[in-house]
Amino acid sequence: MLVFFPKKIASGCYWPSSRKRIKSVSSMIRVLFICLGNICRSPLAEAIFNHKVIEKELEGTIHSDSCGTSDYHIGEQPDERSMQCAKNRGILINHRGRQINRLDLKDFDYLIVMDQSNLQKVKNLMDIHGISHSHLYLMREFQPNAAHSDVPDPYYGEADGFEEVYDILEESLENFLAKIIEDHHLHV
Ligand code: 4NP
Image (cartoon, rainbow, N blue to C red; front, side, top):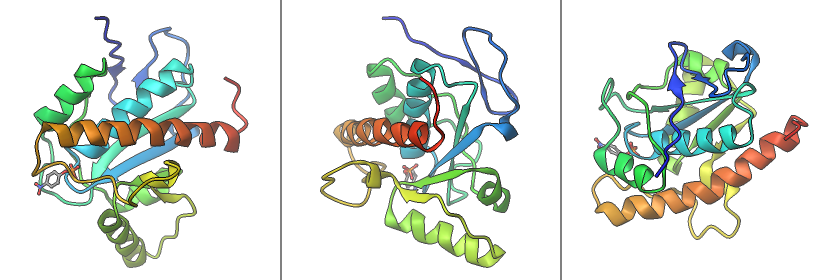
């Protein structure tokens, strides 16, 4: 099976396989995926989303990253089960855990949280720093007919929980990317 794995360069953006010139990250549309630990859901979301961005040849236009609200797993590789789940679908994850910080609230155009707890923590951080953000969403707002508002936390569960998370993310991210394309009148 061929796995497409773009190289992550120092700035955090991906160097397109086509080697076409990319803009500086600051002039790109920037998306941040947020969960609790930044080892299960948000790095998986980042990898799936980036795969879709590359499929649409928008890698020079849209930049994504992920982080956690906690400091539990700073510097760590994603959870083995997340990596395996992604690999089963032909996607590799390339990320190290990091915690959200004040600058993220300003630097990213879209903040996408996985659950209500993440949402509350990001809102608290905004209050502390007196920052508002007009594009803060729960991931499952992009999944029509979602049974629940949260992407379930698979950390304490089994491998099938990660498969469920993958399916939720896959559908939600397809719709989220369509929204970005529409919002920014991107040509695909
Ligand atoms: P995530 O999952 O928020 O999707 O990365 C978790 C990872 C670690 C922990 C909880 C959730 N933890 O308690 O260490």
